[in-house]
Length: 229
Image 1 (cartoon, rainbow, N blue to C red):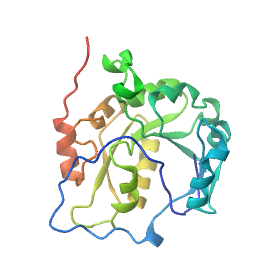
Image 2: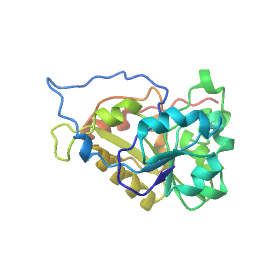
Image 3: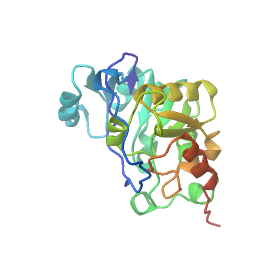
Image 4: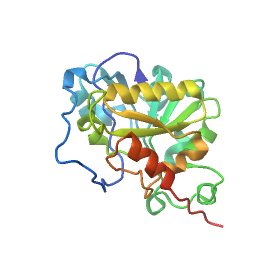
């Protein structure tokens, strides 16, 4: 969970492989470390705050660990990065009214089958939104390797600046995420509501690919949804 203060931010790792590879002949220079916007971070997991001691030490003075309920209550907004099976354990009441950034991906071989997602009744982000009916869920950051959030950001106006997409039903929540993308060095591409967030799923053209904003829009448009009956 994130509290408002500008420091460097880091997201804990996510499943997925970088399968791209639309780079030019040279890579733009990343943002200098001092120019990276971040926030005070309250980390949590299902194993307890003590298990996060090493990560807190790595992140420094602006990070601390807490229980999920404590972290949810402390943050101005939340970032959820868990397997789908952990959704039921995400605190509901402390996140009411808050923006929740959903970075989760659905891997049936890891998560098992979710018929409501397989059938198209819900998207992955819609599944979290159903659990958090009074929160403002935005799908974001699910289609970039965690380490590249730190390494790939570049100043605004950089040629072929990497773009990241977002999807959500609340305009204010999407503005917050778009601003966060910009602070971290990425162009933001709004692809619509949560019902369109499947276009960022695993194995879709936009998933874990280095792409600029124009390429992102093209890849999102090329997405094909495969539903079970």
